Length: 229
Image (tube, rainbow, N blue to C red; front, side, top):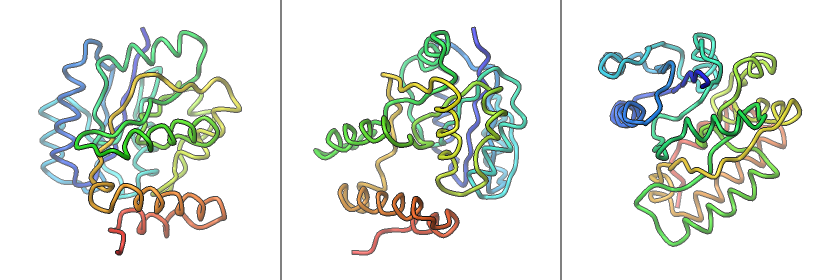
């Protein structure tokens, strides 16, 4: 059985983090190590980590830097990167173990929206699955990778957005980087708030700007902001 080190960046996500750590605690197979990297440095986050037996680290509020900080403290064979608002499938460690035992160096989970859902959700999920086959799955899909491969590739980019892009591209050149059938459920609050199609179009525009050379630091502020009507 592989030893999984889970790295969770968070920033004022106390309620969602507690829910995720409780899910991890209840899984049929347990992780070797859970590292929470707090971008806000709050007492509440520290207490939640103590409650659930997770290691607590502090880094600046930049997701790429947080992920690098957590990975540097990891001692497991495999690194699994989760967002604090993720909702997990029934036995994710078993699914990842199966992929790794088949020769993969890493992979990612299927994207599904958590409830509340609306009719565009399955359409967008299918489109995202297609995009991930030819493009890059993003960090909210529970990217996992063998620690040695991660180190060889230099880890995440130290950016607040699109930090996983160089890592995933490098991993696909290095070995098999597989999509799993199991789903991670993504918080749909931004799509609910901004409109399912408008939020999706907004995200696609940011991706296009990034591919055209825009700085992730500038794009991050636009990603997290509410879309104007």
